[in-house]
Length: 245
Image (cartoon, rainbow, N blue to C red):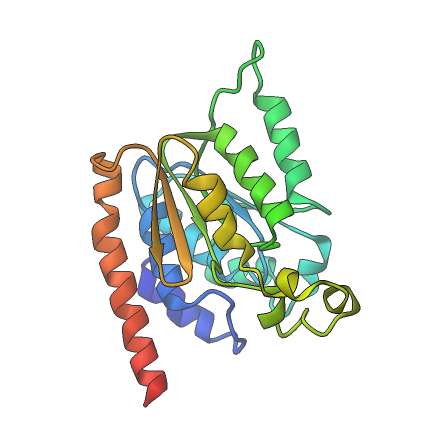
């Protein structure tokens, strides 16, 4: 399924997607790579990003995506099943509902371990769930154990904070936090303190997105990011200019 078809189909739902077309394009192009077969998404939401990734798998005719979110995600309108069903992309995706995606990652590690070693089994992971240090920082450490060399992790909402969240900032839990806790960009801390300091990762910040490549900067797979990044930044700049006018 071509990228343009996904964007048009999603517009017909009449909701406000949490994944922008620019981010959708980036996910689509990375997932379209022939060496990306086993994909994981942490945080399903409505299933917008799920659809972009699944469309890339459909376009190349190979691959599988597992997307994980809390059971309450199915109460969204539309939910992931409705989105994928409308677009005809169900065959490429296994939606999983769990209280914690880190518990699912624990089970994946248990199944992967052989003779006290963990053979990597993932080619791509999109982390767009809790956006907190304790949850997504740990998620990165778990995913890193499962990620093959010369493969990708993408994190959304690098500049997110509790203070800027319209759904969380006024809750009792957030109001009880210190000002520092409320205003901290926790995903950015994960990128700077965990991913950049883990040997063998190259990181690029693209707007509010972090793209982490598990390999050398001169790897052919990483070089392909340049064209995708250029298209992403151009689309992002175009959107911002249009909004300013």
